[in-house]
Length: 214
Image 1 (cartoon, rainbow, N blue to C red):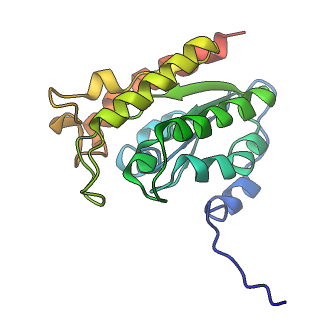
Image 2 (image 1 turned 90 degrees about the vertical axis):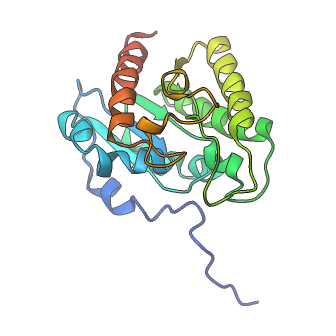
């Protein structure tokens, strides 16, 4: 039997070197890891000062990723970095069908599994809403707006039931057509610098709330 090397499906290699070089946090360091897709990944590129001004914030976003891929890399890219808080932002690429069709409940289940992995390792959780999107340029047959609303309802309800901090980006960024406000996006999905300006005080407040929670 001949075994052939398989694809690094979850892109574990992306941050493997950076993770190895990252020292464990000091005793009083409130390290925060951001795990997500391109909206997280691009943050460092499009609004670099946010992470420069908050050196305990660690970006572990990977463009194009689905919730299942994030779940697979949650241990090396989150748990092993020993953060106090993780910010989980997932779901839009699942709705886009980036790795095939998947139901809303299954997407939510992947996200909730990440929450439960974090909590099992004494990591506080900030659970972010999916940002509004009216269409996907790379998946034009998908109509995401109502699916995003449905997924966000599940995420919010889970957060409330389980006393997890819910981070509502959606309300501040949605337009009248259930899409991303034009002035906040560089397309129908991804925030521009103005979009990140809206997101940053929201996530910082959510992180502070999580750090103060029991």
